[in-house]
Image (cartoon, rainbow, N blue to C red; front, side, top):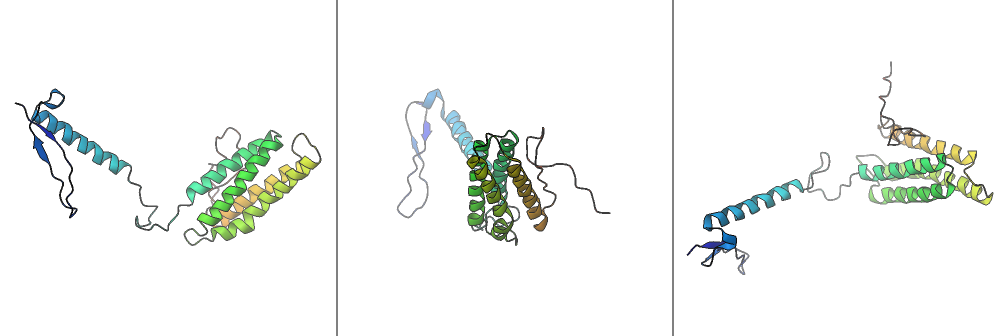
Length: 203
């Protein structure tokens, strides 16, 4: 009679060894014992591969055991996306949509301040308070005036406020030695609100 192997994981009270027992029964899925072994070994190998692929990498030079480290890039990517949608809303004179993405952008700024107050020696929360938040709120005030004036679109005042907002983003990048990340006011055909043209080297 063919013998198949069945794994019976029984951890003893001491947290010790997996107990594997052989069960004499009909062939499993029509496989002989060697076929069953191949299936089991293949499954184990696949499981180990999946675990290795999904193991989160350590953050840019930071020890994997440092649980206090929070990567800033995902937060900035979220803010960039929301600001890009804000720019497109203003470009299309859609004040209601601009107000929505402006609100979400302000929420993203608060999340950055709370979750990543400092990053690699840079006072992120302080810079958000002094450079970013005031310009986002200035745009919020300008859009509120547009609404009070019952404008169908977006005023020149609001678009100028957005220009100041973009300048504050680039100013923050300069202060934190990331001037190579340049944000334009309009993306054109670029799917990202970012310039990928190399900055001119100082003479």
